[in-house]
Length: 198
Image (tube, rainbow, N blue to C red; front, side, top):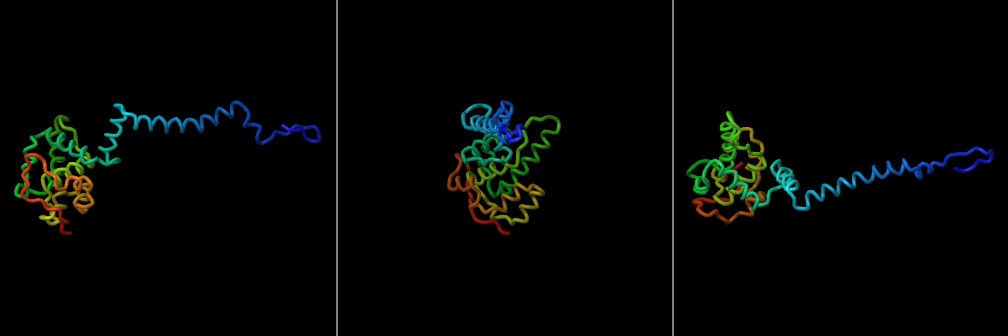
């Protein structure tokens, strides 16, 4: 406060900064967001069950990408819940449509299997895209042998799988990381990495 010539006291515009209540408010306004950032970073960076669950859920929902190793583990884990790995590994172009259609059909199958009970957890779009790329890379990709419009017709309104088949193989990170590799016991009669006909 400063004294005016007439003897009246005038409050300075900065005097409320020094008041204890105002300082506490400013500490909360600045300190709370900083605390949240530090806490969230620690939760995700320091290995712990909660952080792992958050990262896994973010990948399942498509917010984070699966690494090729994570996608391979996911493919084996999720697909062998219903049938043996040999059924997948010995699948070839003579057996049926490309894996994009097969994984889409598996999603429909899980819906039907879960009508009475919730025995199998439903696939998310991000999981199916990752699983499809794994089997394309390890077993074979014969999308190029099919017309794109036929694949799209089989996929119906499954936009995630349609976007995948419209994406060039070179732009599919998991599939390209597994290019040239094969799963033990797989039957690789035909493996084409060409672009699909549009």
